[in-house]
Image 1 (tube, rainbow, N blue to C red):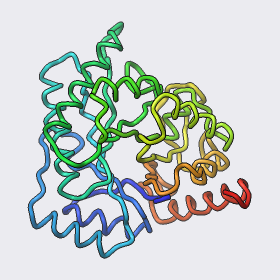
Image 2: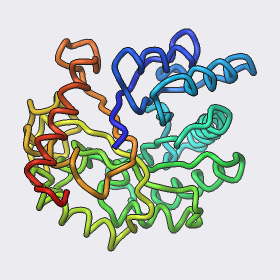
Image 3: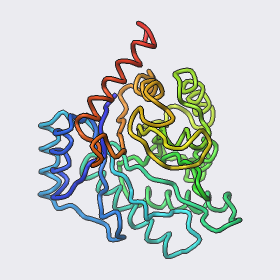
Image 4: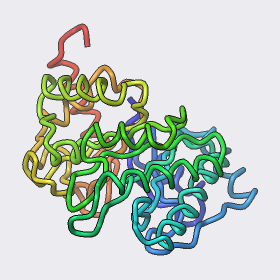
Length: 291
């Protein structure tokens, strides 16, 4: 498992590798543009070259690019959908240039009260398909959501519908977030609960689509629909739940990124990565010699 953290790319994407190395990351995640602005960020040839050189000389094995939260590919507002399409396409193009493992996307939201979720799924899928058609090579991972409001992707069936309506492109995968799963009603606090959840995922989506992971403990309870991350071991999942996630055999080789405030309150730091590795060992021991 490639355990890592969301880091800042301020100063250029090569700086993100530097910050990942400081934290002892095997994977990093960045926003490729200002998360509070629509304007896409285009990397220069020199920035791309510097990034690739920095990554090649480091122990960082995977880059995830998280599409910014402004995007709503399911919006009923044509202008918002157009902006979302442009931003998502730029993220996929940046991912291709940097050799990213994938772009991670929150699929969108049916914001209007009483709005049709089915129609929102179709709008989101059409926007996703357009972005894939306008870009090359970089995979797109749809992230499951906690289920607040009209957010899409709160269930495996919704993720499967999005993939199907977007054309079933081989580039479409899924990023599973532990906090979101728990908040949307999947009990992943134990190795057994997680295994059952993955069997449900396999039946609906297919484990072959699982491409990346977010590990965040949850402030909210089971089925609370609250997207509130907690530091590892400090939330509802607890040490045991986080250990089960980190030691799940079907997650081996996947980037697993933390998005918490960290023990120091300023984002994930080296001490948080050390705790994650400690919890992984706890989970492996609990699973026994065949894990």
